[in-house]
Image (tube, rainbow, N blue to C red; front, side):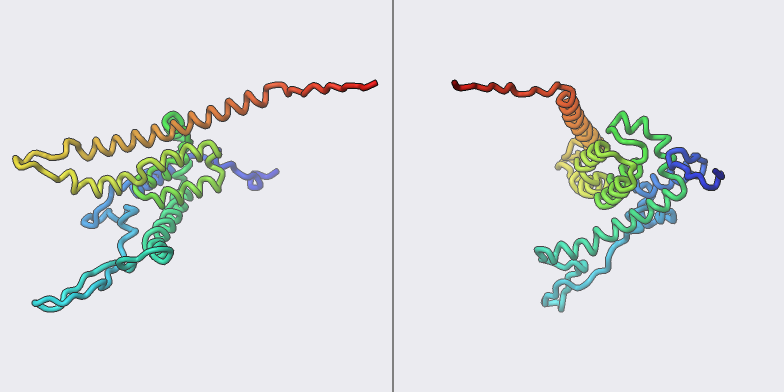
Length: 254
């Protein structure tokens, strides 16, 4: 058999310096480190490339000074039901999923997942019971729920995650979804509250709150690991126990 005819197993492909560079760029892209449109490197950020939809006039009111308009998004104001959900998907979910899947394909082509598998598998196995291949999906889910879900589905379809690992990873993602985006964005206004004397009214820092959420995510994944371990032990004990044949008693009548 010729060398060119051999199919190289992705797990056995050589990890080069380019793979680690691709992994580093992927971490920067999905983590939000480069966020902020005022810097030239903001093109390396997932949220920045997602952008925002344009504004449309949502309401027009007549005032003594003239006509006042209220701007809104393409989704509109006061929607409900399936149509409102469809508009939400068109404006937020679909673009996020498409961009995340497209970028992970690019990073995967340049070896980011191979580098993550080799570098981070021992750490992630210990913490939440998943291989290092899930690194990019884990980073993405900290910033975008849709992006993390899309990357996790791609890992599942490619066979990179087993059924047990998929359950562990889903439990990790379900606890405090997208904490970097949701918590950091909405907590900024709450943490800014001050007392009359100028001291902070909320005895909590943003870093401490984010740490609590991350710890809760790890705990959730390990609870799922314990549940699956208990189920596996129960099934193993059931398969090893000898089958008990019921006794048959025959009564003959004279």
